Structures are given as structure tokens and as C-alpha cells.
Amino acid sequence: MGNRVAKDELFDGFAQVAKALSNGRRAEIVDVLAQGERHVDELASEIQQSVANTSFHLRALACVGLVTTRREGTRVYYRLASVRVAELWTSMRDVATTHIAEIDDLAVAYLGHRDSLDEISRDELARRLRDGDVIVVDVRPVAEYSAGHIPGARPIPIGELKRQLRTLPVDVDVVAYCRGPYCVFADEAVRLLRSRNRVALRLEDGFPEWRRADLPIQTRDDQEEAS
Image (cartoon, rainbow, N blue to C red):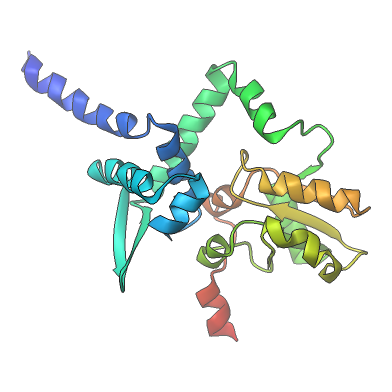
């Protein structure tokens, strides 16, 4: 028989990861960082917390190796330590959706009812992009678009969409996407476009799922090299 104390410590060590993600704000930080790296001020704004509170949560994630940092001048940028961290967050979210009954009600309270919102699958969108018969709009913050986006997508953060509607051709379907299945930005975009008599659909999930499916992505660096 192995040493019981050593086994307890080993499994307690494994549980440190779950403990780090046991706070909703930390889970939200991981969800944001799944889009790309951000500095603490941006993260604080995204999760509507003070910089001090956000820094506290980031330290908790860093202590168990879920996030890493890089310095640029006086700013420190945070990123997920690996793609496995994003996969862990997705798995945790999916297990909760499957096994916790009230998650559906909580999602509706936040997102509203989606029954009237048409969706498009990743494969179908990839096909339509190849055919060139659709406009894709990335309604996430510009920093996330820069870190990575669907090739050909137009960066129009949700707060700017109403002002930029006239830049979208009226005779082409519009697909909006954002951070994932529990991000409200794409829903708001589709509702706004449909209120203006536009044919609009939301991507079935979001950019992280598109990237994990090994579909083409583009960054701002790629665009600058091509120009």
C-alpha cells in the first residue's frame, strides 16, 4: 500500500486547479483570456471589478499555473498558460450545463430567450465564407479581434454596431459572432440587425470553438504582413 499521507497531498494538489476556478470572477477571467491576452486594466473593465480585485484573482490563477504573463513597458499582459486551460474551462462549463438543472434558467435570465434567433454552424459558415455570400461581423472588443479572428470578419464592437450599420451591404446575410455560447454580444447584434429588417444569424458558439476546430484564423499581424 502506498503512503496515505502522500496520496492525500497528491490529490489535494490536483484539486488546487478546481479551487482556483471555484470563483465566478476567475472563471470569467479565463473565459475572456480564451480570446487572447489582456492587461489587468482591460480585464478589470471586462469583469467590472476593481484593478485590485482583478489582480487578486489573477494571482490565484497564476499560483496554480493557469495563466502566465509577459511585460511590455510598464504593462503586464496575462494569457492562458496553454490551450488545455481553455479546454478545461469549456469542459467545466459543459458539465455544469448538463448536470446542474438551474443553469438553463440562469442562462435565460442573462441571455434572454434565443428561440427567435437563427444560428449557423461552424461548418456551414466556413462553406459560405468560401462561397463569398455572407458578411461576418466580430462584435467582441477590438483587442480580442486583434488577437485572433475569423478571416474576413469585420471588427465592429457591439457598442458601435448601431452607428456602423450603414457600412454593411443590405443584400447580403450577416453572421455575428463573439466569445462563445454564453456571450451576449452576438445575440444583441442579431436582434439589432433584425430590427432593421436585415437577415442576421449568430454563430452557434464563438471564436474559441472555431479555433479549436482547426478552422482558419487570422490576427492583426497577419493582416499587416499581407498589406
